[in-house]
Image 1 (tube, rainbow, N blue to C red):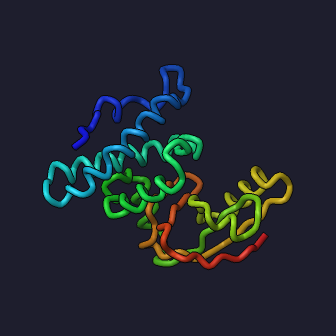
Image 2 (cartoon, helix red, strand yellow):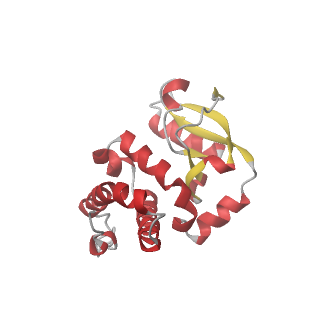
Length: 184
């Protein structure tokens, strides 16, 4: 089994002058991607391995909050969603207090929005959604090149894989079929 490189995984994501260190982020993601599968399949056999999985989930969440989609590009979109789905069962262990409070504040079923460019079918394939219509409008304006749209759907709270209270971001499970409609 590949061993965890804790020194790498606990290295700061920013340099001393506060700039994001993309090389460290990419190295962490690559390491997480490499070791996660081996640990995942052994997590129920060994409490230490389960703790390592939770540790990896936490580091993955730190990167998610700190960076952008560009940081995840080198592991590939499908691999990213595969990791998110696998981490879903351990997601609570990796969330900080604010994220957990945000999760607890959500109703059992709520409306989510996504803003950007393209048609409804293209936009609904994205992973990051928001529970705030104004945030979705901002994304439609910023990335829509004057032709941005906002779509909405309904999400069950139990289908959240990852969330971030900043921008009220939620990432739904990939295997659910979101029924989306364009609202703007």
